[in-house]
Length: 220
Image (cartoon, rainbow, N blue to C red; front, side, top):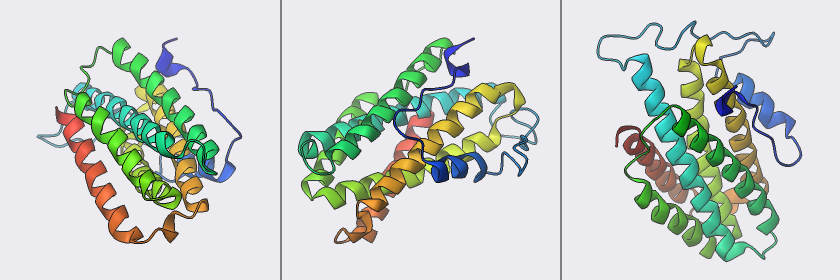
């Protein structure tokens, strides 16, 4: 059994609502928990669409890059807010992101996928985003978390819906991680993210940057 077939260990108490949303929101499972996605990866693809092998390679590359960036965001936040009231919540999210990254580091090696060439940029940009929003206050740091995790929710949902039965292990890993990203979003909202001054423009800017980072990391 390869590492991407193993069930990633969940750290901390389970969050039922987020897990249920992560399992069903993208339409890959029906009310009876039966898989209802494509029979095989690439089913229904059109001329010009990526071949299944290239699609999987792109998914693994961008997910590895995304989890690396997420770890750096939380490291930046912890550098500023590690001893604050929100410190334990941020550290819990950091530990989950670190586990996500470790999993995709194994998968990227097993599948011999080239990592993104932009990782040095994400190393700096991720930490800078986390630290700069933390300097604006605990609620701004949580606003950053909410914005990033909402983009990752969309991203992982799209990926899971494209994976066929032959990639069930990778799909299950993505869906499990997506559920944990939704927990992080809920944590940010519970810690007053939406009360941040200028929440809407801040959130929009972070989401735009996150989507651009996804697009770039898939391709380079």
